[in-house]
Image 1 (spheres, rainbow, N blue to C red):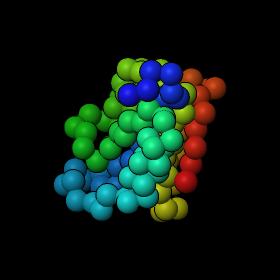
Image 2 (cartoon, rainbow, N blue to C red):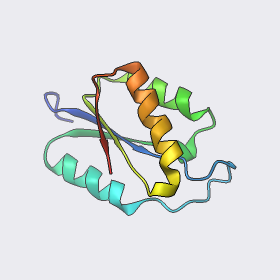
Image 3 (spheres, rainbow, N blue to C red):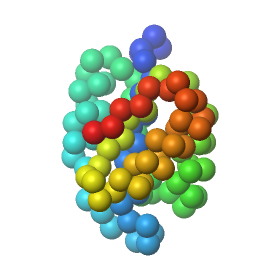
Image 4 (spheres, helix red, strand yellow):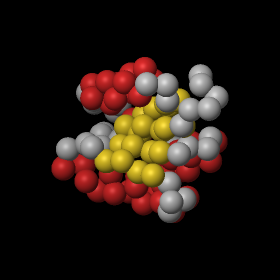
Length: 102
């Protein structure tokens, strides 16, 4: 870990709200993570498909645990309500925190 590097959180949205855990891991987020790490950034991934808590609590705990300078997430348009909830949760914690959607 580079102690002087920007802290970035990548959030994988919860694709299955029934709790079965059945979903396809988005390959794109793994590629983005790898590219950011190769460029010297400190990157954590929060996969909301593997949480027993409600999504808002999980996100709040993670962004409070570190001093992130950027949070990124994304999905196809059918998951817009989940993406909006993620961004709203992040912005309720810190409205100036840089957010990236893809």
